[in-house]
Length: 429
Ligand SMILES: O=C(O)C1=C[C@@H](OP(=O)(O)O)[C@@H](O)[C@H](O)C1
Ligand SMILES: C=C(OP(=O)(O)O)C(=O)O
Image (cartoon, rainbow, N blue to C red):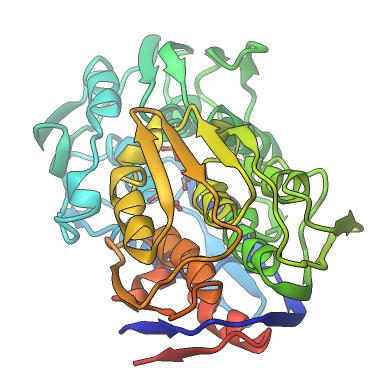
């Protein structure tokens, strides 16, 4: 399905933020790893969270749902032997379940998105699991991947964090269940470090003890632990909401988004600071962000690794800022649903933006006068590219056609409905 995004001068209204993708993933996983019944209020509904629902059911979890709550009968440390799992296009789901699969004799993760998740590297996690008595067949570190587990061993574990934090999070979910105590040392760098804080928070809520060094590069994990059943409530999602806030910033607007906790551990809450630093009038109190945009923006410079899933939305806003913006330390954007530097900037240029790339940096020479648009955008299977280009389309003179915009449902199926409810001129075809 394509989205036809027309120039829109004004956005106005109130929205409830969608539920957090990352907390939904984590609460569902710890609930499945607990032996008993857990409840999760307001879980996200999206392609990624549905992929996890499907896989956890395949692994033996019982899932029932009402409108607001999910009940999970966990399988504890005994997932049901299954031959095959399909995680769709969900990176975090794949990486977290690769470790869970090591408890089973043989599981193949199939490759259903060869042009997106099928291109993403998992070598660093594979290498770590291989040192833990797990044999793995893989396609040069990519899908399809077969895990031959059964008796994974803890102990001294090293994992690189220079491509993704998900590899470390994955091991933090698995190691408490092993017989041996573990010491996990992160090698090289740790990208998206802030996300690991969400992993540790949820592990603690699930009764798991882990000692983490202050710099999050070293962990002591006692073995023989059991996940406790729990009652969880999923907070609002900053990465998806960042695109709505960016849309409000580039237009004349009065837009209010609820359910965005000021003290959230989501790094992407920084998007609020970025948009404020661009000069957009906004308030953030009691979990409510209100943007009263006037379309006037100034350039900013930020370390994008602190808000990895909101960088594209912030870049989209900076396309219309006075001056040159820089988003640095963002190399790992290249290893997401698409290459979120080269592929994204290709589409921004088509729309009329003046952008440059370095290996680990996005540079935007702002155009306060707006961009021309009038072109067809390739979504590159990437929900965040789709959301960011929608922001740009609203402030173009000829609008944009975003091809295959249905991929927005990976994380935010209601995105276009939400924008339309605020008055955006968008048609789906
Ligand atoms: O742990 C997680 O749930 C996630 C970690 C981040 O990935 P990287 O660590 O690969 O940057 C983020 O981009 C992704 O959307 C979700
Ligand atoms: C990169 C993302 O997700 P994942 O790694 O889980 O596919 C994202 O949601 O932007």
